Image (cartoon, rainbow, N blue to C red):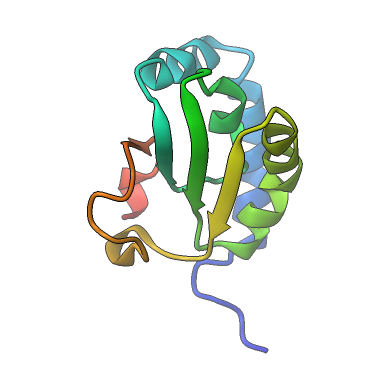
Length: 119
């Protein structure tokens, strides 16, 4: 089985550690502020290790997390499970932002956080 060009296990671990540290800075507050107006079905482009899931407002009822990197999807699994346990439906999709596998007007809000440098 060949590895996807988006799979960078070393970078994924480094990014996960760096973003975890960011949760102890103003970045966590920024995530909450940016997500505050979101409601309904939220598309997260570049789910990464899933920190955005920890900051969802109550008005978000479901999440589609697009993440092309298998190591990143693996790192997000526990946050995805915790979000589902809070009653929010989460679907994680192996895709890239340039080719979203969603019909037009199928989400209510979109989050691009710390990902546009690679789209």
